[in-house]
Length: 579
Ligand SMILES: [Zn+2]
Image 1 (spheres, rainbow, N blue to C red):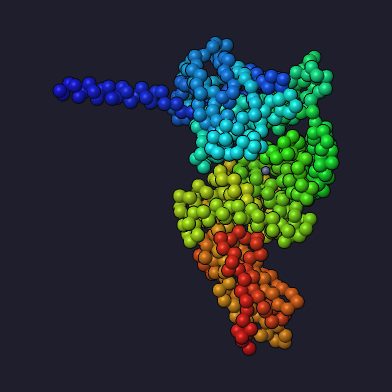
Image 2: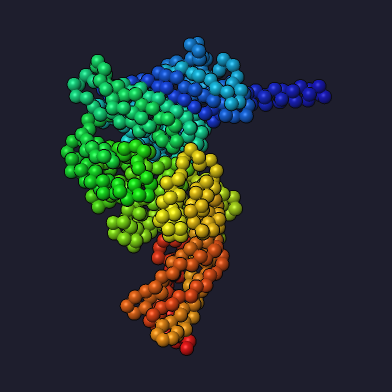
């Protein structure tokens, strides 16, 4: 009996260690370098890739197994190290990181365990087709047409466009499974992968057969990508990403025509001449303003047409893919401002990278049509992210819980609504607080490769202003304290000599995030505006001189995103005036 139990226990231990040995750590390796020869055959909708990749063990333990994943429509042909074929098992792995909803995963036994911080080089070959596939969307109930306008990647004779991680795993990746059915999982898996890959390099030699006689145009969103040239029957491009940053490696092959301007090239499909020209004109008009704020472009902005007029636009770095045919001439300037901001500045931090590009749109509207137009536009974005906060009943009355404060903070969040829309407001509030000159200088001094500490941006701005910004960055950037809720609680009016009034206004902030907010006093024939800082869960008092009897007080012109804006107007009772 006693012996039996011991044996059982021994088996237990053996079994447990066997399980551990086979549990895959899919995110152990960072792919630090890609050197890929990619052959695209539009006639066959086919892709064939050979090349070399370098994997660095970024886990804390030696790794004997490596995992390589490609789209489930592609298949592994060979995996070698130092010229010797490696043993690997190829299996399907369900994940919504690919448009097909699955990956072809190679589970490789390495010649020897790779110690932490060490690297291994692998020679790889794989091939297969890339056709329109929206399985990951249709299986969660997205109507087919809408799904295809979202997942439009394909290789085809008329038009080829293939986006990388998050759309089509056309180059090897290694990630845990992601599911669209589980709200945040895809965004989180993608963010982890992109963070790991931010400093990785990629070289792509892309070849396309050119037997039709008419050379197609090949666009790649790489750091350098000299114009593709013809060699015998092939069309070749040699492109490099110095470091991937947040780029999604993407290639497009189409019979484009081009409107080429100094700041932007617009690649358009037959018949879309007018929309292409109007986009280029809008971009040229926005160029000086974007230059003043974000500096000279580091690369020329590229806009490329998509044939499906309903296709969802896609941007990566300074490349924008968008259906030009359905471009609304009234808003092309907005799209161009966003794109030019990306061409001029970039950051590995989404709230800076995307937040600034959205801020550029607000600046553009301010410049074109005035502050109110910018605030109206920002208001559309406010409803997007405050709706998300309102979903949660608790949020109506309370600030985010402490565990959410850090995870939902602009510094850490993977939530697009926050790092796009909320970040745009944060940049606008900073502009209102420190002024254009100080903020522009801080942005000009920003270096993405020096941005290693979360407080780097704050320090850049802080050094150019007398303002204390600690509380602001704490409430809005380092933590998510929710939104302010500002309210005029009282006003006291006193007649002053010879002709005028002094108003003492008390503002309450019922929310936990502080803000500097404009307060406007309206009177017959005019208004006066002053600004006041009201910290979270506290009150502030301000005195405002007005030349005539005050009629109405309005707190917040819309530049501060608020939880509740129904309590922002206060009618001044005429009887309240004291002598
Ligand atoms: Zn963007």
